[in-house]
Image (spheres, rainbow, N blue to C red):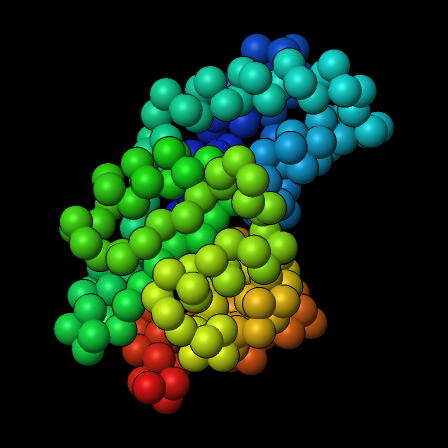
Length: 210
């Protein structure tokens, strides 16, 4: 729903700099992010050192990164084109929407509040204690329960293999979106039922599930 690539790259590279490591080109973060902060930190350190990181290295970099990001979660985050209009159209049709992300819950809520009108999403579930992160289906199933829906009634959208694994694991139809971080091949190889080229395509697919 939101393009966080350049925000993540900025905070990540500042954290690397403070730890004495070189920066990583922004576009390379498309392959580094997506599986939670701990995995992101390990991938970053592996990218700049060429070896698996020591626990001490990871802990230090994570502490700095989380402090930087936590102070300004919405920095450099941008709405994907036409997303706000699509959300409004879904609401007008009575189709409920929710967010599931591996970002810490407070960060996710601040990002959403900064980009979209109040009430654009009925529910937001970021990383919280006791809830396994994606690709575990636990969060997706919690959302289904909150809406009193069967998983098969829900269209799960995402832009990474992690998202496709999450939606499929929860028994939901999965839609891979091409305006995000990864490509068609990755999405199809990980079980995307639909491939969406623009946010407008969400409306067409959502209508078929009603």
